[in-house]
Length: 273
Image (cartoon, rainbow, N blue to C red):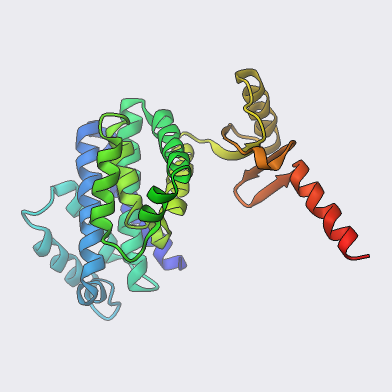
């Protein structure tokens, strides 16, 4: 994203945080929902996106246009946030959409923070991703870019209804539309990391051949926290195909000490002789 785009999102974030300081979890959830609705509306209206991000138009004109469009459609908080966004400058029309979506996610996570359920939301999003990975048919449906995202979102809502926090359900459904233009799985991973970041934590994706016990998980998390100088939560995936050892990924950092990797290296070395 461009520097001007980041500055515009920051201005919108300040409006959101001011609202969040005195809002209830329910009000924040509603605000997040409405910002997602605005995001989807903007995706479907390219001419409107251009008008609202056109640098040749005065900021007040852009703000006035969006306030007229949203009057009676969304609450004052969501309107104020979107109005602040369109007053900013953007490198492209898609940046405006991404900015609105990013603040929708922040509002929903702020609702989780108010309720004290952020850790649960993070874990539920991760576990849902693993569940989808384990079902080839479901994974194919949710990863499809050719089908209606609304239908896929309804499917996700039905799968999670009564089994996860309401914010988890809303975020997982939003992943069907592609957060920041990502695919479904990448969107879920982004949301897991966003939930962790809201708790000032990093996320380590750990692959092992056999499950770790609770003590092993705690020790690994403690070691990684020392390395990164901040709390690190571990997300464990069991994959017998790695044979043994461990693979750890934190952001762009990857440590692969698996037996399968060493065997692959040995095979390549022998093949090169």
